Image (cartoon, rainbow, N blue to C red; front, side):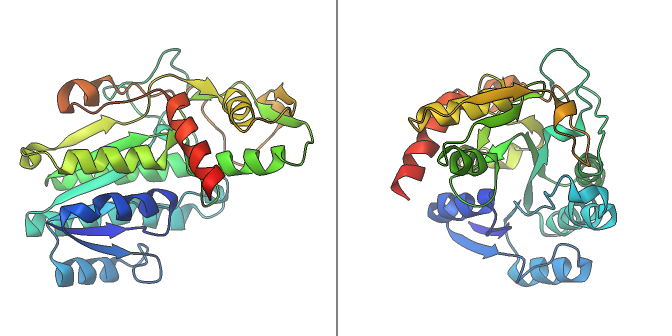
Length: 285
């Protein structure tokens, strides 16, 4: 199998490059090799490499900065996925794309399912929703995996921010009125690889939520990180109003992964179990 992977230098892409290697030839690209804001470059690379599968792990992920750079976020997150979908369809290839919980407004009191209507409340979410719709409009073979609160023991993310700050011994103040599902990049990579290993891979199509089981708040996530690190740092709960950000965040962005478990057999351990794995890796690094 020939796989074109974008975003190899990101936290999900880094894990994917390693997880996908047993499947065959992996053509992994970073921003230096492929700028997703450049439509012509996208078309040129896909036509040169002729992959059977395209895994798009590249994205504009700076949620707050996207409020000022909405045009760039839209080009990368909204336009580029549609171009990849067009090129994949031309080749008869499968496109795997990752989207976000931030396509929802957070007003639903229970976890979101795939059939719920999106209503993003920030520029980042709008750009990601545009990407989903662009892929669906092309109508080729595609798999859109919505996920949330992605972290890894490398890169720049909430997990590492809390771990590093906790080691100073100073008390932490963390928002406690936003709920979601922490999702490790390693889990996403392993799940994606499992899907691509299916004998009926040609039938893979559609939109699925892919997150671990359970839910928590940012404060709950921080407390779990501190506890698993064996530290005794105090973590104080605060309201979103006490920590204003340029981009609004949904109060509830919990995703329900029941469909991908039922239909595609993906196993979704609890987020706490996956955090243990990340902590163990972080300790070895």
